[in-house]
Image (cartoon, rainbow over all chains, first blue to last red; front, side, top):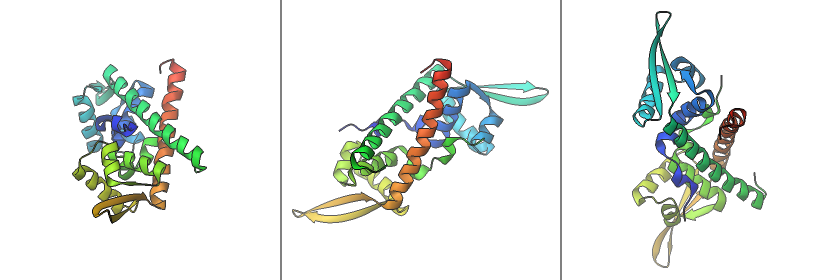
Length: 108
Length: 108
């Protein structure tokens, strides 16, 4: 009776946080402004989701000054990468079931 | 600057609702008890998510009596299927980016 959707974890699956982790999995680290602009978020919304990821231990934040201006770097942690890989695996299983269904019924 | 995560819609992407729609995309319709047991939800939690999907026009609910007992059938609507296919497409693009990254760096 188990369904791949049961393996999805809200901390990682939530739309904005999934986007943040996908970018960090590609880039290792990104600055606050890049994440905000790429995902088209407000400062407050991005900060809120980074806090959730930080509290889960999935990202680390590094507040620097560069050229006299504050710059926050965001990196994915080892456990963040593991959690993201588990999410990717669950999504792949979910999509595989749907695609299999599409082949069986001729719908895609 | 566009990222596939921006194409994810909370109505469909939310973990429980994604599971409901994935099952309905496979089965066309399912009864309340089957969804509840397959996704390991409480009655109240499933009812809450079905209400969100119903208000979006993505599922229809049919309350019947069978053998003197109430039974609620849940079906996915045409627009629910379209929304689910858009979600699947966005997830496929997101996973393709991550997998491409894995091939480039040797990490998987």
